[in-house]
Length: 142
View 1 (cartoon, rainbow, N blue to C red):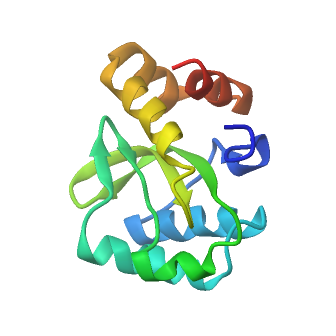
View 2 (cartoon, rainbow, N blue to C red):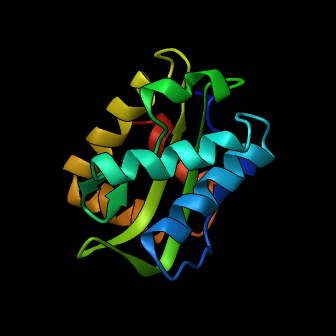
């Protein structure tokens, strides 16, 4: 997982006034770590228009469309925490796990994320994390 999620892709004090703004912030982080081209951000927004990426427990997993894989330079994840929450079509999202994947390298981290979300205590730890090391530890040990 170290090659998919690094501490520079974890932002724990984000603010967004809308779902789309939160998705843009996620995409900007993926661009800043060199994982995707800027076109991928538009694909993330397009994906959200077709199906919500909200998965429960205050977490969304924004990602691009199938056609956007050409905009992925390397598989990567970004974790953004929104302490004030973001209205995600009526759901209160506190954490976004953004995915850039040309292949299936992200499947293991999604499995770890699912384990975290099934445990209310671990889900709470993810939603309230203030140190990138805590997020890495939580997702690596699940």
